[in-house]
Image 1: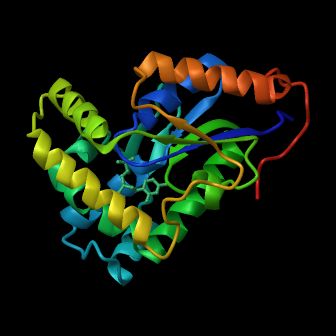
Image 2: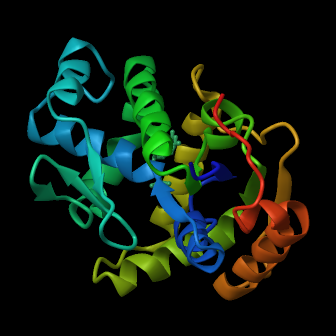
Amino acid sequence: MIPSLIITIDGPAGTGKSSVAHRLAQRLGLEFLDTGAMYRAVALVAIEQQLSPDGGRGLGAAIEREPPRFDWTTSPPRLMIGARDVSDRIRDADVTAIVSRVAACPEVRRHMVALQRAAAMEHPRLVTEGRDQGSVVFPDAALRIYLDADPIVRAQRRGEQLKACGRPAGEAEILQGILSRDRSDSDRSEGPLRVPIGAERVDTSELDLEGVVDCLESLARNRIGQRLTHSAVATDRP
Ligand code: DC
């Protein structure tokens, strides 16, 4: 049996978590789970099925009927709803505008946490990123990381990302969106954005993507290097 090894990366929007987590996973020979994409998929379902993004029975039932899932044969894994690849669609502005509301619904979070733990059973050597991965979903993860950055830097980065995908937006508007999502992600009652107990906190304001990945890779090799070589038997599951 392959021993499980989970690294969690949490932090606010625009810290580069997804790209960093994917690159780190590649360097360490682990798989990668983007949990923000799962909440975005639920927001897309709410839009398409005209369900309230604030929860209620409709949204929970829709998730049960057709839960978001990843195609693990691609790297990074593509996000699917049924047979449809929604990986690009979930980055659109209409999804981004309501995803915090969807992520604040306790019922949605319960479904997502269960799906994330199930994914970790199937893919036990994992870098997983989100807001609650080290604090709620995998509190016993081998390494818990919290990425942070100045909000203005985060808005600039998000602006560059959107431009690169052909969806340019004004920086002031992006900053407002980021600050408002920070607020709702931190203030919600279930799974709020928190620095997990025992987490390594890394400020990425002054670093580029490769710099952050270098920093996290040496952190991982120093802290859990032996386990990265498959030699130890351990479990990270709660
Ligand atoms: O990282 P992102 O921007 O793709 O996340 C989308 C939204 O989902 C954001 O509002 C935070 C929320 N989220 C969450 O509440 N818990 C997670 N584990 C991941 C994301």
